[in-house]
Amino acid sequence: MKVLVTHVPAGSGHEKAAEAVSNAIRKMRPDAEVLLMNGLDGMSSAYQWAFTQGYLGVIHKYPALWGAAYHLLDLKGLAWGAYKLHRLGNASHGKVLEGILMHHNPDVCIATHFFPAEVASYLKMKGLLKAKLITVITDYMPHSVWISLGTDAYVVGMELTKQELVRRGIPPEKIHVLGIPTDPKFGRKGDRQAVAARLGLDPEMFTLLIVSGGFGTGPVEPLVHALRNIREPLQALVITGKNTALYHRLENLRSTFPHNLKVYGFVDNMDELMDVSDLFVTKPGGLSCTEAMMKGLPMVLVAPIPGQEIRNAWIIEKFGAAVLAGPVKKAPGIIQELRRDPARLKEMAHRGSSAGRPNAAMETARLAFSL
Image (cartoon, rainbow, N blue to C red; front, side):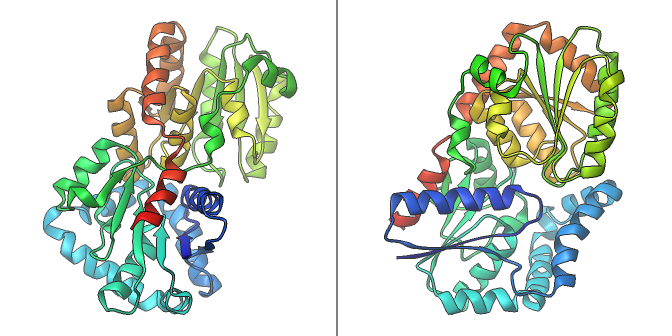
């Protein structure tokens, strides 16, 4: 059996989900041929840059414009026009991916981004691809771009996500609430004392884990400065990702910072850092929030991008696993309130654990073999 798993590096979440599913398939069926690929491979470097870095530039420099376009193209009356626009763009730029899909001719195609999902769907509708198509939606509230006529199954993170797809006309039997796939290590709770000792941290001190994302984006620096307003002692673990300039600026703060500040660059032990933390302060990306919920780590969500992030925040807050702070300036007050309310933190952790699905990748692999 041949399975092709494809993603797009627009943020790190799509790729992480694809890697988790690929690893699960290989573990479940060592005899299966598994191909993991970037859906932009083979395209011009200029287009790849525009798709990834251009996207990041727009959402951070012109968030209001991005949010307006995102919501406009998701309006019910404009959905068909939005699809035609989407198809027109993919027809122009998706020829390389079309050729790759037809060349490999997989039995199952799994897409963790809407671009390869739509291209594969188009080929299926034209009779040029026989593969079963699974679309893994990596946000908690779907946008119309995720919906394609040729999709055989949708994998979603919550029952609320399924309800929204049903409202949009997707047959319930096509929607599988399996969780957003990520590394199963986030489903294992480590020993706080032992992990803290290994990392040189104080296991008894109230600890914040502040994450900027793999690309080092988000309001991390102003958030760290805002923590000066908190009087109670705390430990702040700050992940700057690939943003080396931000890393060095924050390192320079350590000698004068009123709290125990630890700064990290790109890390591969996020699961351990979550094990020693009491609160996760982050932008509401689908994968990072999923990992925190799997760990039972309460969240404070800051500065969500209008569009997919604000929708993620609404859903996760509604579920009870997070508090949406909104602007950075509100975060210190919310952090202090939660710190002084252990019962509420415990309830948030419980709600998150009940939503996190550590077997999501394996369940998605099982679904692939059942279609």
